[in-house]
Length: 197
Image 1 (cartoon, rainbow, N blue to C red):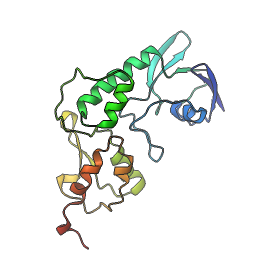
Image 2: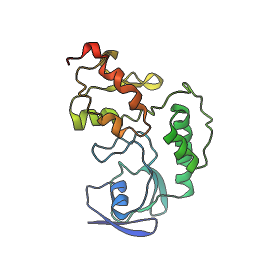
Image 3: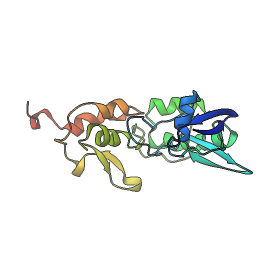
Image 4: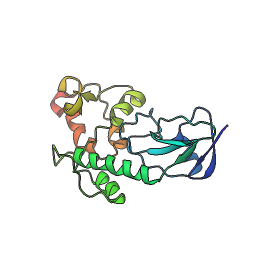
């Protein structure tokens, strides 16, 4: 077992665990959006940041992907961590301003506006890709994917066509942290005329 401290509390972890795994096991809350135990971590939302202290220096890391290490100290709620989370939430407010979940989480950190420009006031998707990962890793059909790059990146279907691979299991809707997939599922599946009933 690996032993280290989170917020001054001694915790134990299996060697292959991440800091987030150890925190969850110890009952220590770290906010997450794109993390789900059913799929591998991606670190896309960056909300689970923590401050890692080793000796006389520290750095901010993503807890869902950072491996545990003997003797480290982790701070989940330091001023540095809160500042990074506020910055992340400002970006998320600009990316998906229509998401009630993002607004509520931002309000917890005192963030009500964003300094970043808003492209689409109706957007709910934060582009974390959790829906894509669950479709690929759990359902195994890859009916949805990320399309485009950078500012043109969206969640969609290959070639923008309705996907015959979609089995309408609703896994993408269930794991979506912002509720964005609820409105996109019919577009993924296509109209009734194209389906075999």
